[in-house]
Length: 89
Image (cartoon, rainbow, N blue to C red; front, side):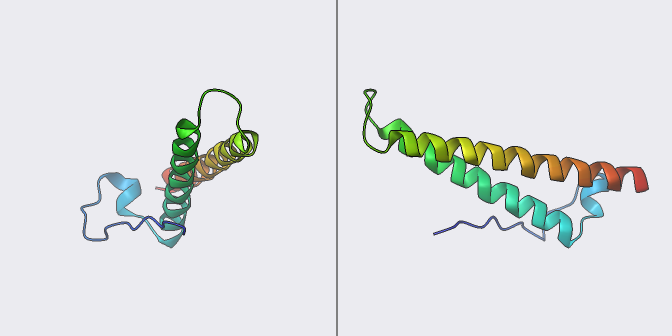
């Protein structure tokens, strides 16, 4: 089951960037939040495994690395979007 982050639309917006948010920004936030949740779930699974090598550890470590790569990509996209918006305003 994928957890999708829900942004509270009634929360006050702070600063120029967030007050001018649009659907694209919401999508970036949702994607980043979803991947953060995936990363934390994988990390929790790895921490539950014994210290000695176990079946499935390498696969979990590979998934964690992939998740970290996705986090980096989502964060980069959000930063680039944010920079463009900031330059426009």
